[in-house]
Amino acid sequence: MAEPTSVRPQGPDSRGTDSVVLPRRQVGKARAQTAYSQALPGDQIRRDDTINLNRSIRDARNSAAAATKMRGLYETDGIVSTAITNYLAMMATKFRLRAYWTASEEFSREAVVASEAVLASLATDWDYTKGYSDKRGLEGLIETMRLEVLLTGGVGLELVLDQYRLPRDMHVFPYDSVTWVAKTGKKVPTQKNAQGGDDVVLDLPTIFIAESLKSAQRKYALPLMHSGLNRVFHYD
Image (cartoon, rainbow, N blue to C red; front, side):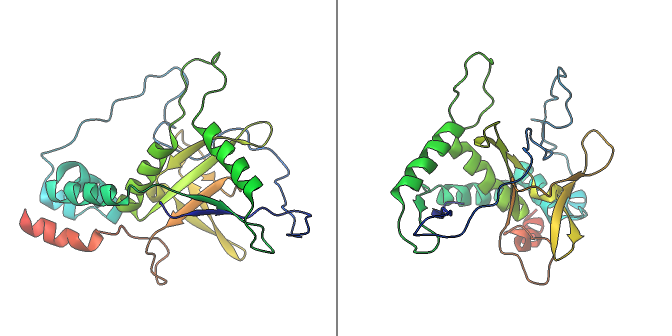
């Protein structure tokens, strides 16, 4: 998650002739289901900071999904927790931002300045009349995304735009909550609706999903450390 980020501006310019096609309608609110989606406005959010130290090895081994095993062991097993924490520490490198023109590959200082301003605004509260700001810093978001990749093999991110179509916020959602649905020529992500009803279709240009070390034979990615779980159970 700390690889250099390249932004390639496009438009009717002598250095790049391609044009960007923007969405016709504004996505005014977050659509992806997160840990807070089950709570209605005004409801207290139930605490989830308890861990089950009495969970048997058989229950852990019988968990169907690899991500479910990894999440449970990360919270209760010292070996798994230490390995993941060490990986996170090694991955905690600074990210870099670069911008190029699409056609000529020429460096664009203007695009870098604009991108830096957008990134700064994502972690800055400009309107102090709205009370508590729920924005997370960019470093915290990246840390959560790295952890999700280690636990599940992928990560989801939703970019929330304001009325001017500028980035307002970013929400991380779990990769293991995503179900791919076939669409002509491609696949699109969906999620279970936290309030019940139809699944939430995330066929939106503001949804980004990354998968790590995904085999060409699998439709869903596996956690990086999944093959070491048998040895963990052996130690127990």
